[in-house]
Image (cartoon, rainbow, N blue to C red; front, side, top):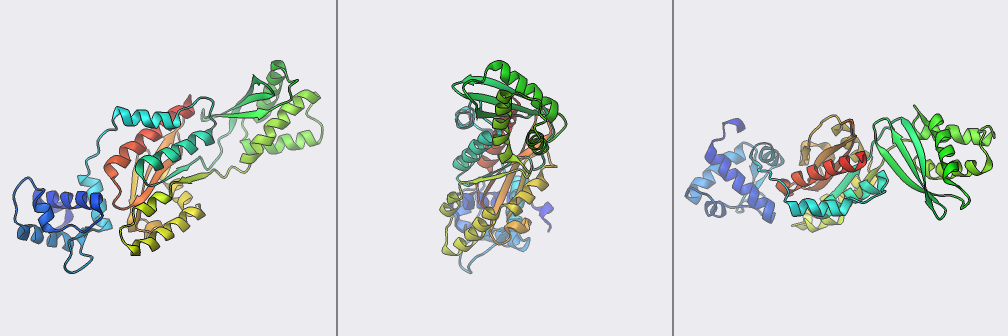
Length: 347
């Protein structure tokens, strides 16, 4: 018998076992399953079927006398073929909206709130990756906010809008801001943010910018803020690692979580994994040893891409948690959040 040959009864028993494991984190016995089945089966019959499932590599027994647990292979089989994923309720959607949506946010602020939202709602660690490669710029402008502040607006060729508030001298007028925006747009078009910053620093240092002293102050204020992003290395935001400690059922799982913490702190490996997912335009799930990154940590990763206005994938949101995470809740929550982030970045 192969996995593809599992009959309806075997699938039902396996599904009930996994659902019970996801809820409790404990090994599941035949008597527990017999009480949940729609068709009455004796515990002995269920034990025989569970033994067949174990032979297929879908289940294992942690102790001789205990019930069974799904293997990583079993969890993958469950997610791919037996998992029932519903839609988020209107109240859940509204809650996510309230946690993320806010006017005049820059990209980092949107992604930071998205990370906190998916971590809090999933009770797992939330991760968000910004684009690793910078897009070229096409427009820059400034909006006068009064009281020594201006809103710097950068639009790249993926139609992603970046807003940043900068401090400017009180004497700066709206007309001066328009002049500074035109000057920067001419020098930014077709360049990445890092390239623009480097070129402008050199030009200002040579005093060949052909700007008056007041307008130069606006440009320098923008450079001071944008220089923080120089390098184009992207960013990885990780929040909610403490939720992983709450998922520990046994002390031997603590070493696995410590291993995962070490991996999340380093970020490079996680960033490589997320980058590899950017070619897929759908939610992807990596369970346990299926990915070498989690071979020791015993965890899973669910990833959803987010897009620019032109429907180009520019980043990814993910949830890292135990292999027994509630996938039926995490998947629609992550999907909705990714679509909301795309919508906000396009507005």
